[in-house]
Length: 192
Image (cartoon, rainbow, N blue to C red):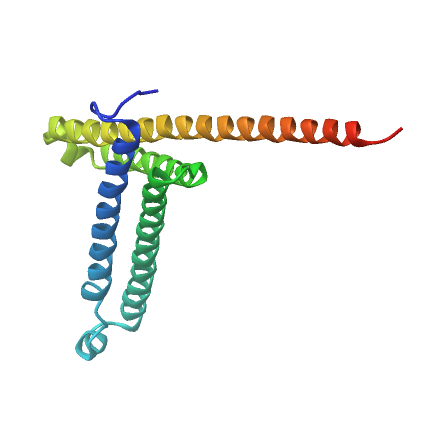
């Protein structure tokens, strides 16, 4: 666990991470929305007339499939944006459940990034062979940034859980002592 985020308190570091991830999620959503509206244009009549029926059907199926894939990526962006807003709210208030949601989504994103990196390294060996130092450096930087974000937010989550448990214990002991005092007063007021 880390105790600070580049010299800043964990709450401030987590807040900065939430803002950066919110901006990245908005850019991600805008990019896929733009790709959805621009890249997937309907087939023209000339394309349908000059291609065989099977080719037209395959191309239309590919377009529909790509539309759904793009929509799924947009939903991932919206989910990440929702989690980042929740993380920002958790830095303002004691809401550990919102931190947990962000951690869950970030771990899935880290696993996805590592899977994509493995696929790129093993499936595209000819292209990677000529650019291996650049790819490895890029992969290491991305993975290190993701892991550091997760460590900072995990440390903040641990602190917030400790605060919640301390507050709960204090409240419980206060209520127990008040109930015991109230019971003693009632017992003393009873006439035998």
